[in-house]
Length: 150
Image (cartoon, rainbow, N blue to C red; front, side, top):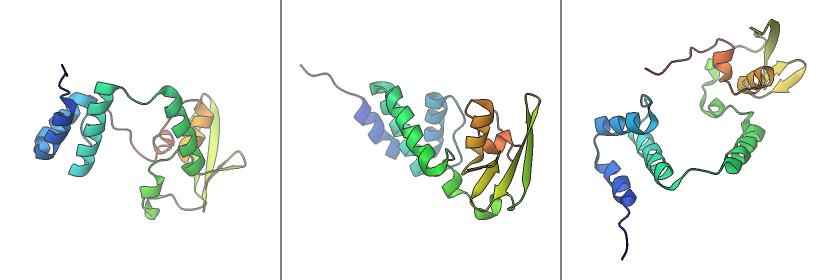
């Protein structure tokens, strides 16, 4: 006797679902508001999440390895490749952030950023070096507001 796996049917149903239904599923599965991206993005992320919850996600070792590879490629800033050039601060701009009583100065360079005499490809990598935890560098340095979940 075989057991019926409902996951393939759930994945197939995503294509026929309305966009408002996809957004409702997003809220249920991610416990957050859906991003303002296109329908194919919502479908693919929902399909992954459905499978992740049913079958399990990536092993912690795999996640760490992928993060290390990403750090080597883009300095940890996954959005940098999609960012418009005019969204970057002007070369030479100094970003100043106080953290635990210490003032940190970052200079925008043509290739990224410089902090304490070392080049960095992303503000997130610098924020991580300063705090020891993962931060969105743009939020940490006050260049972007952090939107809280409702």
